[in-house]
Length: 354
Ligand code: PLP
Image (cartoon, rainbow, N blue to C red; front, side, top):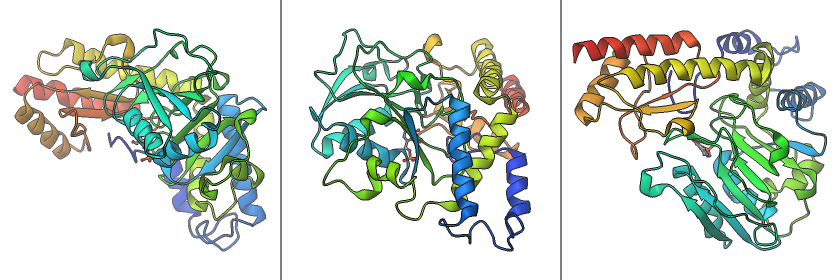
């Protein structure tokens, strides 16, 4: 399953969920039936939080919060909670999801300044800042670390002066290493690398969490910190399943371990594409994503034929996003190397026949 999300989950996790679904911890109740106010769930959410802390080496002065509403919910929550002083946000326009974030903040009445954009390069490279920006001018700078649709990623963060950096990590959360200290806030839905859709992780530095009036409780960081992410009923099953994926990730050697595999997977496909006379990836080499790889023959009909034949061969969800066209392979944490090898073998044979 090469879908951009929700995506493949680790096999052992699916099997564990299957085995535990009728009764969790000998309780005679399904995880889907237990109270979020129970000791059992307290243990589950606290373990998940600790595992995020261990995996990402999250410093003590950062909170780990579990929200609903996806990355899209955070496009609204982040400005409402953080853009309280200047009501001004700086943004690097790296593609569709950066634009969505900017539009949502603008819609809520915040000033959004796009400081750099690669729109006129079809987002095939990343925008960089050629000016130092200051916390005196902006509440924060918003970046999308991995651009799911366009297939680019910041492997090194852009220079950003002393302004608070906010990262939308939705599509490479724990797929490659970032230093939490470089950000004031990180967010992302778990449905690509870390679990089933329904949980949104927010990691936020303590000094940025302030009481804010007149914002919805469901998006209020201060309230969620106080209530340990349980102001209302959290998605109990999804947090449990995410917790299992986090344990699996630890077994893979943590983020360093999985990043190594992710690099092998991406290299396997990029090397094939760079050698191919039929398929090509057009992203600037240094900006290529590890997790989302768009490619094309340059002929829409042939691309469609390739997608159809791949589907028949059991290689699912390779259709590119409608704004880009072509094909896209999403190689998130749970996609094994063997899956990418099967894709490359298929593409190689398709090329021979065409
Ligand atoms: N940001 C990025 C980089 C994404 O890839 C997505 C979804 O694919 C989103 C935000 C939106 O996330 P959600 O669907 O969880 O609202």
